[in-house]
Image (cartoon, rainbow, N blue to C red; front, side, top):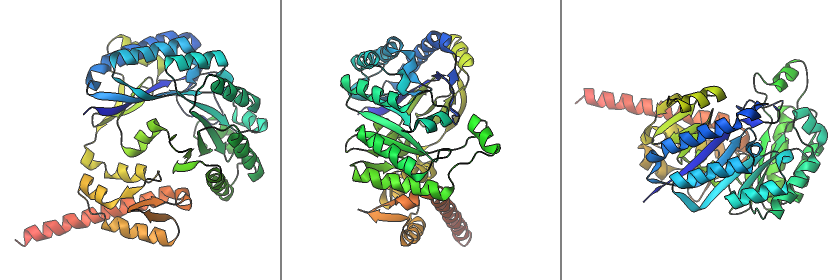
Length: 397
């Protein structure tokens, strides 16, 4: 039986650089789009042979702002994928887009090319907040983009929102949530603003600009969980909510250990038992592909039975959570010490056991880094203790 494979294509071009962004994105490089797409095409064709036993069931154009490529280039890349890979008829094909780069003509052409899911970077319903983030659009353009997407009969729309913005109060965040719900997307992602080193926002914060404190950000998160549940959106991951059946199939691969192959400058992959990444440099990527040189900047071979740490870190980001029998079977490790810790967290309202599976509560998600760190330490200590006990037994026999 063919294995499922996700394809990720990183499109680094942007109209402008947002104040908070530390992704590999490049404003003012439109002249390099054709050469970059040729490099992507050659790289995908070269890699196709090793994916012969796989069925591509998700494709994700991320960035950057992939919609800036235009329908002709995007269609070329999708046609090439279908030519060289076994792409499922039911494949989920997602395109990230900024509201100002979306119009009816573009979306209709994209739908005909096979795009069936669009993720819009709305971020806020307040123009003053969008301006503070350095976003290249206003809320009215979000509404226009959604209208264009619906007129093209795209039936799977996701909106990205951000909380914890400069000067943001709880009422501002509630207003953004309500305006987003009114647009009736099938999926919503809600991210807390992070100040990344080297960004324009980091410089402003260092100069004294204030952000909502941790307590207010926590209240904003819990507000989103409650309000979106009331509106019919089921939380399935720390930051992601969906109407039933509209969870992001591609992103679930990241959190549940599925295979995915990335292409493009800065793209990451987990394919064939290896994790690897490509050079985070547009010109190097184009040149190396053209000259037949490697574009891999880092790689690591990780056998499945050594991925217990990833299992804990990634699965506990989801509401599917983790399960003892599954853990023992896949990693041949003792789950009992972890279960004892999870019971302690349950007593504090941070975790819950349902149908034999452990998951974090919304309050637990707020402390997920600490909880997961505790579980990883617990497992390492238990493994060390088991190893020492085995050595002692061997010495006495």
